[in-house]
Amino acid sequence: MLDIRRKTGAFTPPLTSRERFVRTMHYQQVDYISHLEFGYWDELKEDWMQQGHLPQSMRQADGSIPDHLVEQYFGCEQLAGVGARIGAQPLRANVIITETADRRIFRDGLGVLSEVQTAGTHTIPHFLEFPIRDRATWQAFRDEFLDPAHPSRVLGETELQHMEDLARTSEQPVQVWIGSFIGFIRDWCGFEQLALLSMDDPDLVEEMVEHLVNMSVTLTEQVLERCPADLGAGWEDICFNSGPILSPRFFAERITPHVARVTRMLRQHGVDVIYTDCDGNILTLIPQWLSIGQNAVFPLEVNPGNDPVALKREYGRDLLIRGGFNKFALHEGREGVLKELKRIEPAVLEGGFIPGVDHRCPGEVPWDTYCYYIWTKCHMLGWPEAVIREFPAFRDWRP
Image 1 (cartoon, helix red, strand yellow):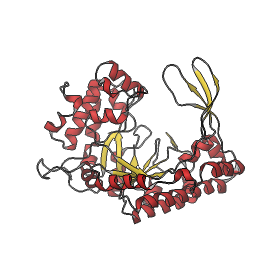
Image 2: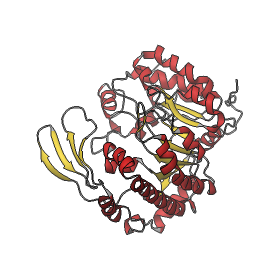
Image 3: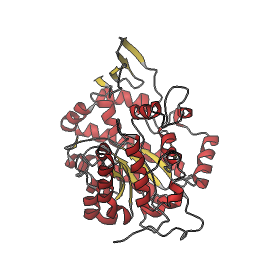
Image 4: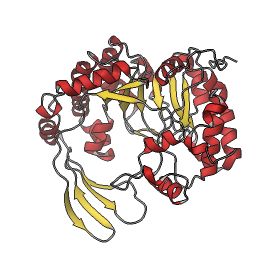
């Protein structure tokens, strides 16, 4: 079995996080494989802090506990980011319509009307109305929020210089944000309306996709002309457990041919690791992404049917993976964690696969189980035990 790890001392000094990431994703030998995670449910962070496992100093003035601080507590490497202002802007202020002791109905800065639960566990909002319903509302939304030349999108010289300095000197992998080409539209239309529009007015959906692609190419290229990046980062979230909200045929005919312009632009600037962040069952979309140069998937949720081992066997080195550790194994104690790590280990050691929990770490995961997961995973990745023991979380924890 191929194993990209090398014995301690083979790289002197040790690789930087950036070098390690690039080599891992290009199937080159490394000192140890990259150690990345994807955050935590707020409820879990609160539980861990109340139990005394996380230091109170992590809590911010607004009461939040940032994911990256918890990740760093577990020794996780981080990504640095650069990018243009691609999303919808400028935003209006939120407007509260009604509010009770436990519910709030409000219209957000883009015109989406939502109801949220304000007491108890926070949940996904219940969406009541979306701003884009037809061609007329699309044109109004586009003109207000999606003008690529709007002054709010202009990056000043100071900001550009800061990004350039970061990109050229960072020891962390540098990702450039490329936006979303159907996920954004889903947010502005709603799942149901988007599905209906794909049947009733497919030209309109394609027009929206093309506009987002044009904006991404135009604005992102201005950043890449000065900022060298290691990976392109896109987001979609347009799949359920049974597959994508739109048919694979619709993607092939109306979406991916446009998105190909983005991947060509990235590769022209030396960015050849291009990932799509998409939850749900993505199996029918992977071949399409690969066909246009989107070669990496994240977080690769296992439960909907995405098996990283099977996918690496099917696509070989063409497919890069970040994530792919079944989050539900964390509810099965040490035995479940070890079983899942052993299952994915052969694919990880071949390279092109940085394992991590396949979404944000869910609630009610015991501290000991998560510590065991990080401890065992990092040993699998080849991290020296002396280094792992220096992670702050392990100073008072023993395996």
